[in-house]
Image (cartoon, rainbow, N blue to C red):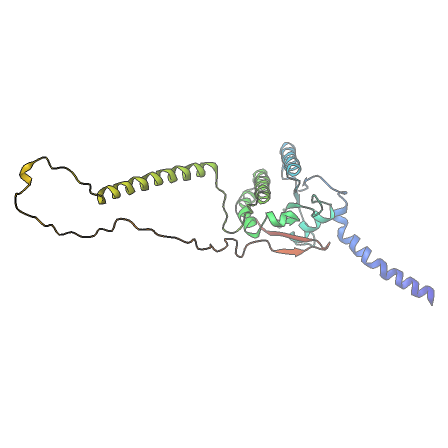
Length: 273
């Protein structure tokens, strides 16, 4: 009886391990940490695949933030989001103690894509930022221009993470201002300030009448007092303005998160192309 009970307990203890092993078999086969680009769907030729992988490695190391791309032909029984989260987690992606990173997955059978964020990636890639990224990314994918899609994903990821680390998270109400825009804004400000100053001087000149000597004696009349009606003229006023606090532009922003099968927290999005 004791032996049978021990055998039953042993089997019950092994069941979770066997189930977990069957779930993760697809992800463990690539090793502890595969390359940051794995193109199983063969969307890129060898030279372009090498170019994208070099960029992924360089930018990831510079930012201390994993940027990963994976393509395949089938998601199996998983959704695109589930597959992306599990691929990231079970292949040990993510840099630093919080496993900071972002993953783009492309699956060709159903033309699915998913973006999974982890650690600092959840901060840098807000729901708003991901939506802006997807707008152009999906256009490239739909056109079959996968090299441009991946190149754009790397560029945008680098920009989002760099801006977030500088305290400028790309979120609702924020926008990218280029150097050309700063130059135009500065020029407009200078012209506007000059115009306002010139106008103010002209107003002061027109309202301040100085006494002038009369050189023509015919303008004077002897023995006659010419009383001219006078009035007070309002020349200047002082106004004190108090700045009213502006409402936060990030109201309703941030990132929506969920929990993956490994128990880790992820943000991200998915869709079709």
